[in-house]
Image: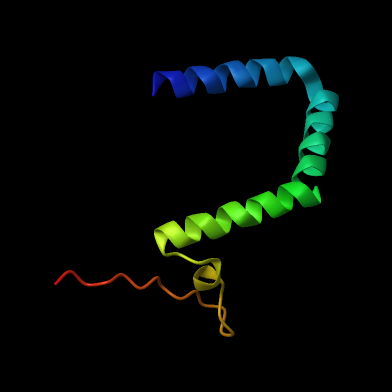
Length: 78
């Protein structure tokens, strides 16, 4: 817990010193990387693999026509 707080404090101080221009530059770089087709494809593969392993699929968490999300089905223990 102390490590997380220390990391957040260091990040805050460094971010404050870098200023808004550097922050905007970092955000633009992140967004361009995240929007890259290769990254999107890899993220889709990872999501599918995690869905297979956990049993949760993305479609289960999408709202239905009424705007409500279906609860995941949890099998009963026999």
